[in-house]
Amino acid sequence: MKKESGIRFLFLLCWCSYFCAYLGRLNYSAALTDMIRSEGFSKGEAGLIGTAFFFAYGAGQFVSGFLGDRFPAKWLVFTGLCSSGICNLLMSWSRGIGFMIGVWCINGLVQALIWSPMLRLVTDYCRAEVRAKLCAALNSAVPVGTMAAYGITAVVLSMSGWRSAFLLGGVCLLVMSLIWFFGIARVERTMTVAVQENHVQVPHQAQRTAAKTDTKLGKILLQSGLVLLLAALFVQGALKDGVTTWIPVYIQETYGVSPILAVAGTMVIPLCNLVGVWLASAACRHMESNEIKISAGFFAVCAVALAVLWLSSGRSMIASMGMLALSTTFMMAVNTMLTAVLPSCFGVIGKASSMSGLLNSAVYTGGAVSAYGIGSMASYFGWTATILIWAVMAAVSVLICGFAAGKWGIYRRKLLRERN
Image (tube, rainbow, N blue to C red):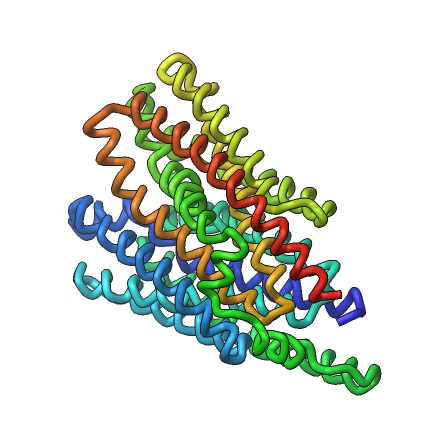
């Protein structure tokens, strides 16, 4: 796709779809307090619903990545949007905790069908020089969708009950699935005209031809050094999603503020995380650089921020919030570089979706484990020791990225030569 208008339309279609996915994902977290109050669930029972989603989403990412390289990506994204909308509607009508766990688990599986296949569409239809920038910019839907999900749900809860939050999410996703259906058809018509006018091979056909000559995924992971990166991405998921989950509890217990003020303070985190997406996008302007090496620098800044938090914890709530915002912002930059920009490099061999799904699976596994693990560490060791563990994890990830960056640099140059 060479016309800027066509590229912008594809980007807007993908961005809005992923934005709506967050409205039908985080509405549960935002409505959790009201669900516990009105339905009489215990915190443990309600927490099982979110845990089921995270594990299902992480496992689904692994599977959907491979599906995205083997089946039409447009139908996978449509299935994810439509099915997630139905799951949200079912949640708005359900009452039993067991049924809710099952429905939200299915929601995690079908939502996993959206990101990796969508990434493949971008690599299929867009020029090589703009792919990485578009993939990085797509990740801005994460913090914006997070803010919107919490903000819209708060408004809905003030006017009605928690069921309305799921009803609204379901309607938004079903409408977006229809917009996606007709919008991606327009993109395909644009590509068909371009092929006929320029007498070139359809992008995804060319990539499938290249993919046949490629080695197996396991060998790619070893040759590229990405097998080491999975551990760093596990840490990144823990430091982005897990830490964000427990920030209100940390602020409330450490500084004795009200729960409402603690939650309100947390709302600044996704706003700051937009800066992380911008940092990754800025790095994409120098794409001859090494994505993993850049991520090592981001991890280093996060480690320093967490070390300062460890030293100053309990002294200043503003300073603590600032360091937490800084650390999660740079983890968002890592997330953008390693799960959006880096997988786009594999588009030339038809494995952008597979690599995105695999790397994302490691991230969400880290987030799921840390959602429980951080609470356990804080209860047993206290928040000061827990923060120190966070800082050590980030520092170790710097070393992991340092080891992986060398192999990736060599392998990346090989991919660029194949593209050219």
